[in-house]
Image (cartoon, each protein chain N blue to C red):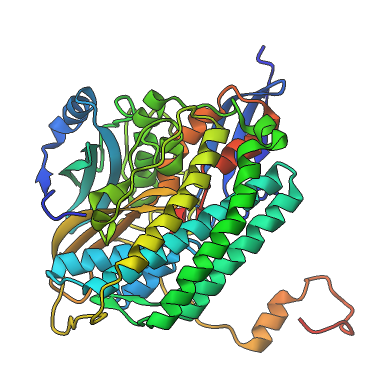
Length: 146
Length: 360
């Protein structure tokens, strides 16, 4: 664990070429993730060689959330890119295995985009819970209470 | 005309305690392609970091998983301490290492039991879990918890362990090790185990590296990469080398775990021998994490990455966990290609899939 591996800013047009350079250098893809900021998304990526990580950050605008796929360079990128698609709503052209937004079957669609407000569910009253648990066509009320 | 059939594997399956789904495209009994999908129980725990105090979040981090719970808490606390420029006292660091290694052993033995069950070896499953129970008893005695330890906090640990208990732990670790040796030999030599695992689900070293495999999956393919070599916690002071097997098949991944159990017993003994005296925590009152960094640890299932972005406020800007199971999905898809349908459960099990971690 180390703080001396900073995240370097990387222009989006060097996203794929940097991956190719690290691949040629014998590095492996460690992780890829995103962060929703005000008017843009930050995408972070890490490559490792001999326990040293090279970390990069690129920015993509919210009005055109598109990230070129790295799955042609590192096949393992397909899981991270599908995750970015499902959690942040980022489009990834050229994705080797594209689940079309169904890799992570989350209840809330694109929950990490920063635009979603998840309301706390109020605890149900016991009477309402019993009513819900009762089958719609149940006519026999003599059975045990749920 | 294509003669392939697609059958669903999971999300509910006898070898899967948690939901993960694979669409298996079959040509007769041979797998042509496997397509995984996850997220059935995604909890969005990472988002909680943006709403909860960074001190409270240590409790959430520990609840990412019920098997490697302590190591998640440890990773979170170590990272926050570094971002705040705080150093936990040596005794806390050593006790964290002991609990982390006990977690690794109980996780591996749990997996060994599950794999024996998947192979149809019921009695081996029961003996594995009987031995695991002895370790869970030690966890309970030293921390008060059996699943969630709750002892790790930012700045150190909450609970000290007295010398008498540590001596008792040392003695019992020796007894557990003897008991484990008996079942370890079965995993190593039994014909049933070998028949179902040798030559099955082979992952070459080149593929393991290219596909980003981690943990016993990677080391079972001959690559000696273990994040404990970064020297976090007490690992920099201890004598050990990563366990490696060369064959890359299900048997090799199984043997890596068997040998890592032995290694963890050694590491615990070394820690107990060198246990420093002194304080168990430092005050972090008034301090807040600042900066951006990625931290890595070695969990029982492999490398886990934590990404932190903090701006000196009480909430983190972003907390991201890349779990080992997530990294091992691409290698799993590769291993399943061309295997027999009957081998799918065994191969899936050998990545030790932790859906709870994945659905953080």
